[in-house]
Image (cartoon, rainbow, N blue to C red; front, side):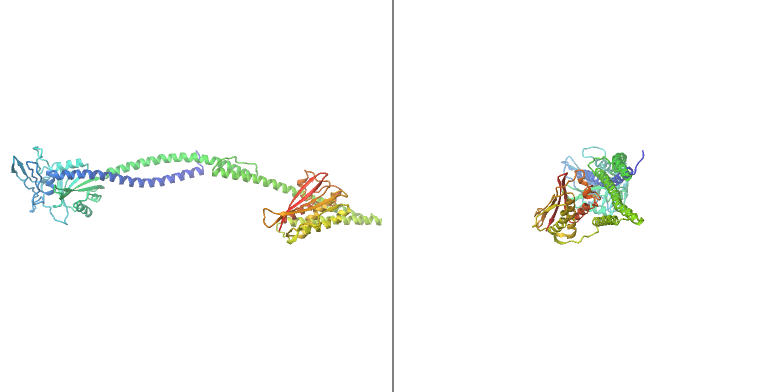
Length: 577
């Protein structure tokens, strides 16, 4: 399967996100799992340590180890008493012999031989170094059959220290150390018996000192001594009178925690591998979903580039892709409209050039023919010669009007051409146009009816061009009105509700001439569009386009209403101050 750019990017992005997620989750998982596991182990070890401390404070053998003294049992089950020495070892360095254990039987105290406490067949040295000195660590194995104490249940086999400590380890599920406060000796079970005089870590000794004050402590400072990561819980051992005689230390290796942590990380790694596979599949599916509409849009864009403005995406989605597709469709619609407008303008330009050529060709042809006749001496009659000269003058006048109108229209349509405005009365410009049109109307016996007292319509205007605009419409009205006809001019003005402080005006010029057909009406403002006939044989077809441009420059809207054989009305709407 071919992987496209978007698909590869999606796979890359999702993979990068998963890698970051995996790193973060691995760190968080390892930290939280370790903390949780240590917390569980600490709670479990604390409960077991307290149970062993209680057992040690009541067990004769443990009391003998921790205090260094023998134990005495009353016949009535009386309390244990500790030797006055309290150190548990001879100061001569030979031995660490336990003092005699006394046992009460049938109301009399039977003194037995002192039972020697040996570790792995060795004599215990004096380890009472005093405060501030290091600890002596005594290691007992299961083969160490040193001095023991007969069980209180009357059993006959002595209990070895190694076996006792081993049982404690199995009971606690951890390595148990019994620490002697006064003699600064630590007893624990090992593979072989021996004595270690190595110093404890400074922090470890500080922990023991705090336990001797009655605290329960948790630490990992024994890890260096035990050569493996270990969590340690320590609780004090108290005598029946409440005096602290030693401490119980429970060490549990964190190897199981680390192994569980590694197992958890392996599971996480497998999960991430599956997630990567799912990510690749999901990326392909998402990419296909994204690529399909993108390809459609790409095709539509290519068609638009090639000039096919009828191309559409046809995508209907309520998201960003759908919005983009709608934008492309809108662009295609506007390009199609623009092309239509461009074609229309091109056609208008061609029609304009054809019209200009026609309008110029006719008078120029007449002029050229007349000149040829006169130059060749073909016209001998003086009267005929005068007629030819008069015709030539008329054609020159027509050419002048045509060129002047073309120049005027071009200037008005140029956005850079600025007309000169001043504050004038629009009604005065209309009056001047009516007076000029009356001379043309008199020739056809046409009457221009208007009110002499028109409302003042003051605005910033070009007086001369407004007069020209009104005169163009009045001239057309006179041309197309029958002899003896009437042209009506009316002016209305009132407050403009949209623009406070201004007033809206309407000027209407109506004739009762031949009118304009509804098919022709939309084109009367096009250049060189003119109604053919005797009435307009001298027209250039540029008058109404000029009038519209003047109106546009003054924010005046021109509307036309007409019916054939009934007449035409031109309406001018604008605002005055």
